[in-house]
Length: 638
View 1 (cartoon, rainbow, N blue to C red):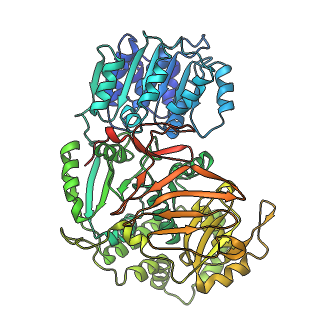
View 2: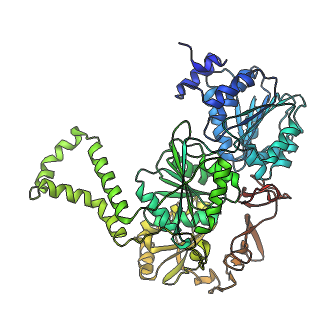
View 3: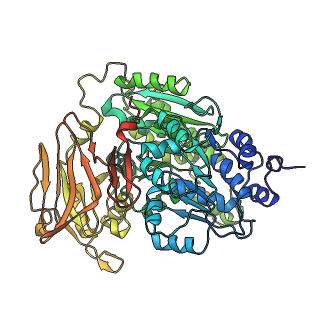
């Protein structure tokens, strides 16, 4: 029987590789675009949601059109983030595993550029790149694009939102005029339309569904809560879905860290993904998520671009995005490859109008849902546990030797007693937490007079906590989750006793409840990490932070290791994190978080790339070589 991909014109070697990956039938976007692209004579615009198989839609035709006997770049694929860059490159390598002399190189910031240059020099036919790093390599005159026949702009709308239009112009100016350009995008804002007109000649346009619409396999729900109850609402949604495997989206890296830390302390298997993490840290977090060793990934919009993880059950919008189009990209993390998914928005009553706008844009009805009661959550968790016990695989060979002792232990209990006690092991935790759980559902207008989500969290303060210094930080490959585990394991305390963790480069600060501070000091007396003694000191001792803090309109800390200055009005931040030693200083990661009156952030003014370099135009944030934000003049605001 002829394989459906063969009927589209794909060769046996590539079809066999695709079959080995478990793909039997092409998706609609693949079925429609592959025959057109295989002709190799037209420019092309493909509009389809994330998760519909766009990589194979352009990747399989490329493998048929390229001459792999020639070790020169013949195809260039540009995409917005390093995660997406790696995903596309890995997919193409898998598709071409049976093709002789096929070479694909991923070029992206945050990785060793010398290694990437070596791979290019060894010969490559397909280059997958982020714009910033590609410009760096072009600037070194290390690559020749004179033989490029095909350029693919993947996630074009997001590249423009991130301020990469000038970079794209510069890169494409080094490619031949007679090349064919293939543009793929989930949405079609005016900026993408303009770039299509500039670089393409009468392109064939293919739209799967209606432009800017959401995936038909995704259900959309929203919950209205008071701003102060947003985190409690998130926990209740997670608890009511015991098998949840979700991406939780926050607006800023600070919110991402805050939510992840709270979830970890409350016993959830979660971690954060944002632009301040090194490439190694990002890879570590994503590997845990892909292997389902982590249940909840808390991410910013930019950091989550290119996440292609199967079977994500939910996308939770902890904060609605600034741009309407971003919601389409967020929700596209679930319901991939024909599966169903749920996109949830946790909003306050003032944001109901934004939900109505989303309904009009994506052409789908949102369901107003009610947060479950404490009783509902406990019942759901109990029967989830019963279901797991009923379906657990029993290893008789290993367990039989222990059965006599187990039966002796349970000799004085009836069958009903054993069942009750076994179920209560996990069930009691939820009963304790939800015994007096309030109704978190809010009506329209219930948010009047509240300070808002950010103000609530900022206002908690650190009363009752001792702030401590530790001589470990991000250079030791610690994330905040890693640091929390390290503190709890060595300090012999529970996660709920730990307050804010302020992770720096070569050192960090963390807060613990006053009552357990001595326990932490005792636990760390003889702890070593990578062969060096771990030191714990009270903040302010030995000049760590100058022995004092100033709060109010701004906060300034300084000392031997340098200091941190924060300020702003109305609940925001303005300033920059700096360190100094002696008379010198340096600014970390180019990060600056600003805030204006009324709360919120004012970020760096400057278009940013995914690696080093100064830029102009747009509004965004560059953090540790990555960028969160977008181009101000291009953003479609609510």
